[in-house]
View 1 (tube, rainbow over the protein chains, first blue to last red):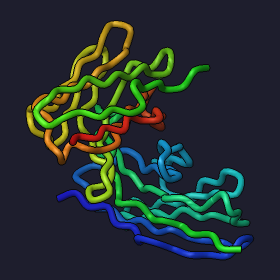
View 2: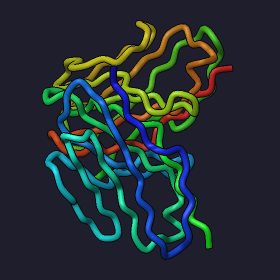
View 3: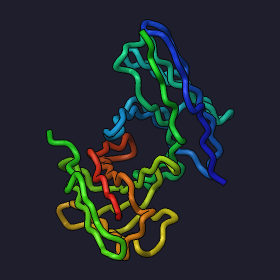
View 4: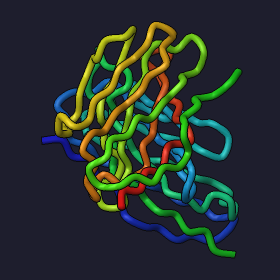
Length: 112
Length: 111
């Protein structure tokens, strides 16, 4: 079956680094996405990986290993506004742009 | 460039009623997907429409339906509402095989 796993919650201090892991088992693979979602708001796009390796975008980086079914999102220089839920999602079909399988989300709590 | 617009933002309905939610995608995007988000189940895919055709469907009962118009705007309908249908309904717009952009969602409460 389809399975996307990520930790439920992580706590880190302002200015620190946090790594959120995501493992997946899906019937197909056509890209992995990370979204940030603040409470009561819509998910906002952070990163997209379709090939193995590291994608860096400012304070956020995302890594993918397709052979291991593994990705991580790295948040550097944490700020209080980074407290949010981080969602890992996999697109498992090439002919369906909009069908994403989501993990349950990792709640990141940034403390002063 | 305008983002994804969903209306209404909030709705309260009674069990047994039906509801229609609307989504206007980003201009030029032809793919619209719908998701249901609840605290217990997380984000779950409902269906995707592309050029007025349903391209994919999730594991939801037939009470959940949708359609897409020639201008790419989409609606989803839930008939015979149940208490368990209370959720945040999110619409996402895609212009290609890259990221999906989400609207602010419609918060539906069934009482």
